[in-house]
Length: 406
Image (cartoon, rainbow, N blue to C red; front, side, top):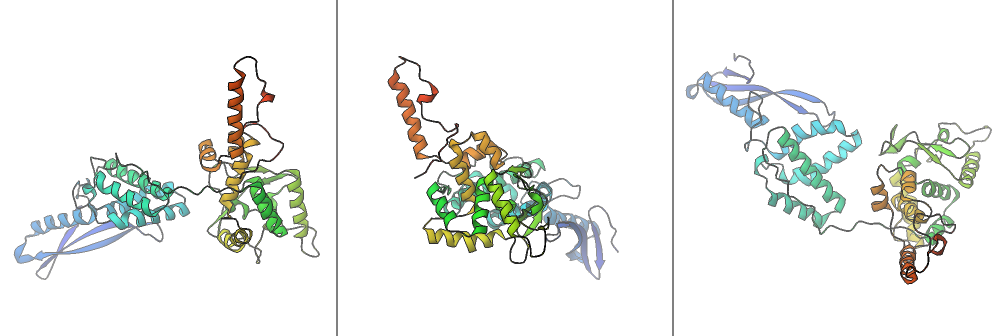
C-alpha cells in the first residue's frame, strides 16, 4: 500500500502504479467546500520506480490544482482562467456579495468571460485579447453589461496577482469601448403622467401615485404591509421582495428608512385601508400586504409590469412604462422643486452622482430659462445690480407650478 503524505500517495495495484490526492472544490448548489479523492493512473511498475511514481503524481497534482505540493502558485500554463475564477476568485468574493447578487454576478462572469476564456492559460492574456473581447461585447450588449465585464476582468486579474499566479496585469490599459449603446433614459411629461393616472383603476392609481411620489423601488413597494404605515403620514420600509422572496434588507444601507407622505396621499392610503377590511372585522391585519395579489401574498414585480404597465403604455401610446421610468421621472420633474441633495435623499441613493447623472434628465424649458438668465446678465452691462427676483427660477428653487417636458 502507498504511504499518505503531503504530496498525495501512490499505490501499486497489480503491476500498475496509481496516485491519489485530495482536491477541494466549491459545491455550486450549497456554496460549501467539499473534498473529494482523485485517482490518477500513472505507469506500469516495470517502467517506473516508486520514487518516480511520486514525482509523476506531483506533476499531476500541479496539473489539476494549479499549485505545487508545497502550496506555492505556479506561473505557467497549467492554471487556466476558468479554473482560477471558479476555484480561487469566486470563493473569495462570494462572501462579499449577498446570495442573490452572487448568483447574478457569477452567472454573468460565466457567460461573458469564462465561456470565452475558460480554457485559456492564465499567463497567456494580453491587452489585445481582452480589449477585442470587450469591443465585441459592446456591439452586442448594453453599456452596463460591458462596464461590468471590464470591472470583473480587472478584479479577477488583480486577485491573480495578489495570489502570485501572475506578475503582470494584462488589464492595466484595457479601456471601456467608446461605441457603447446609449442608455435608455426615458422620462414622462406631466401630461403623460396625468394620462396614466386617469386610465387606471383605484388600486393601480394609488400604487402608481405612491410609487412616483415616494420614489419607491418596486422591491420596496410590493413588500409594504399595513404595519409599515403609521396611519398618519409616514411609511417605514422594513423589508423588500426580490425574485419572489422577502428580505429584511434593501438595495443600499440607506434604503430601509422612513418615507414621508403628503397629507393628500396619506388620506388616500387611509381610505384604501378602510376598503381592504374584510366584512365583520374592525381593522386590517397588520401583517397584510398593502397591495396584495389574489392569494393575499405580495405581487410579483415582473407580473405587474407585463399585466398592467406594459398594456397600459400600449393603450396610451407611451413608448415604455416601468418603475425605473417612474423613478427617473420623479427625479427629473422635481429639479425645479428641490436641490440635488433633496432629490438624492428622497430617492435614497448613496451618492449624489447617481441621482444627478443617472436619474435627473435635462428639461428643455429649464435650459431655455438658464440661457435667458445669461442673456439678461449680459445685456445689463453692469450698469445696475439685478435682484434674484428678476431672474427666471433655477433648478434648485421651489416652483409653485409643475414643469412640463416636451
